[in-house]
Image 1 (spheres, rainbow, N blue to C red):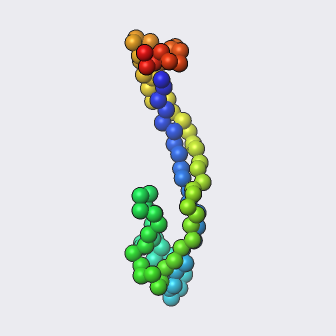
Image 2 (image 1 turned 180 degrees about the vertical axis):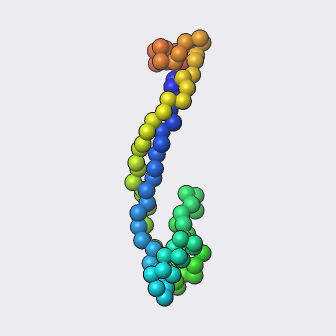
Image 3 (image 1 turned 45 degrees about the horizontal axis):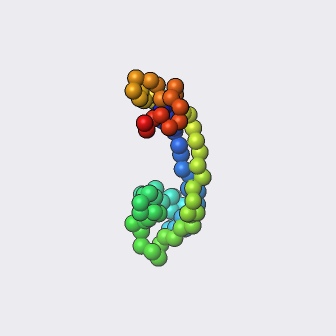
Length: 89
């Protein structure tokens, strides 16, 4: 078996709706108070009456460069030389 490191980016594109005095303040609010954590979802530390959002539940997947990390050896043979089924034997 070969192990690869595959650079992958998940992109969520959406909008935060911010109530603010001006564009600069609105941008600062998003930069400082809004984010995304994989196991918690989209969140904000701003009060609900100041912020809302619209983001899709599914991301766009972008796959980048692949790097061969290592090849695992089974019983003295590179896994690429073994037939399927011999690996678990």
